[in-house]
Length: 247
Ligand code: PEP
Image (cartoon, rainbow, N blue to C red; front, side, top):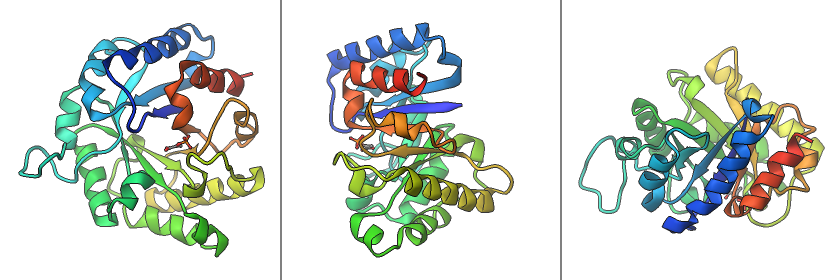
């Protein structure tokens, strides 16, 4: 199974659902549709209406983040995995670099994963090194640390997807070389296999994915799909990525 996950970040109002209607129309007619899943993560404000609208359709709706506590608590502006699940989301991102840079620690991320899984949300756990860490050849140790400090062998790996997003690549147009990315993805799967035993969860790539560079990414067998930021705000760009992936 492949995944095409669109992360809208701080984008979208109710009528932006038109973008998803177009993507859903393509998806429901695509001859390759059994081979992949499309998940879109709009902001919190749109999850309920979008999830209702697409309830019996092909697209799934997810959240971009969640709070590190279950159910209800007295944390202003926080939204728990329980609340997200109750409005119809099926997935949540956890650990996006935007949120790590705003203070998410490994301990917080572990609780986010734990309570998301407890509430039957599938987790897309984001990891990635920054420019300096890459320059200092620390990529593998950073990734290993991010994975082993948060993912626990007791977690159900069938409900976890890992998204490798090098921070220097997000929104910059810069992407890793094929060889680099192949090596890194294999390494991530090795670490995941050692945490979970036997089979690794799916590993996606994210960072400036578009319809032209997806041709290179698709040659890397180990990559199970993509987390797409900028290009997911346009139905054409998003659909073209899927079309070119299966061409
Ligand atoms: C992201 O923020 O998760 C992302 C991958 O963004 P972009 O595709 O715009 O680089």
